[in-house]
Length: 462
Image (tube, rainbow, N blue to C red; front, side, top):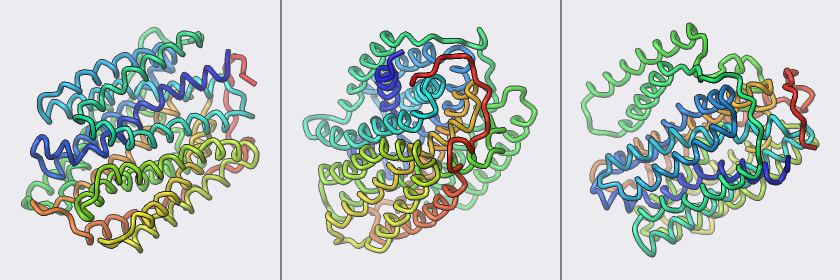
């Protein structure tokens, strides 16, 4: 099996989600104006996508473990394209939100199974490099997204953004066809905890609703009712996960300190990065009166450095262990959050923002490849899809919380958010970055420290 073709297949499938996320980020102000909705409402376009992704990631990974990686990977790509084309013609904001959620539900089958294909076939000596290169492709797509989105907005409507998926999906399916990955499914029918998935979705919606009402004008009755509903849903979810013979995610993996540390670090790191990414366009347009192009270039700075550093992180983790680049990345993210919090004024220069976002991009790039590899290699190979799906769920949970906090803090009624609002936001991110640094220290240092896995008979790519 060709190593470059395997990486091309997994990378093409993996870039779809971040590309669609960053493209839509720069278009949020335009979509808000087009449909005549508020700041808190428009963030549901992001939140619904992230909630569906978070819930479906472990499901997609488990289905791939049971029915075959390539089979589920291909089906997810085709369905994602169909919903993208429908979203381009959405007649209302509600329909657009529904189609974005549908995109996420089917697209969640792609990323964990691409990661599982790599984990299942690549030698441990090159696993960090492979994950780093895939993370680089993800970072590059996130870098291209804002610039591409701003360009498409400049020549036409935000609806053009959804048509970008057509050539990407076509290329991914073509690579998968030539790859001829040999599936070895463990079952002819998937065993899925659908009840757990519904309960988790309800929990995430309730969390988003609570965060979105941080600065709202609703009476205390609505937040109290939402909090009570969240408590009930959480209790039912925990009970379901304890009793289900096939729970939603492989929760037993969290007993391993390295898996817990790496996945929690990924959650917090993504919360810091994604919240910053979403907040920059609003700050540039509504506080400084700047252009979408400026916001796109700033976000692009962050994403390009993520892309350049991710493969280096993977190679460093192969040579010196997973912990070192993860801790270094977390420290850079903390430094970036401090820079943004300390220098946030209405007249802060574009150069200063670019510097802070560059440091954030370096930190995210340094830590992502190492932490992803540490999480996946902490699990047995036959559970690679479930491990990758659960890890991705944690990543998207960080994004959900970030989007919810952003929507809640920016919700100031009819007036636009002031500079004090953004200071509060970046103060919260400093605290999250400190927690991410602590979690990164729990990642295992060397590959040999990871728990031994039961090896499935399959040749490894050297």
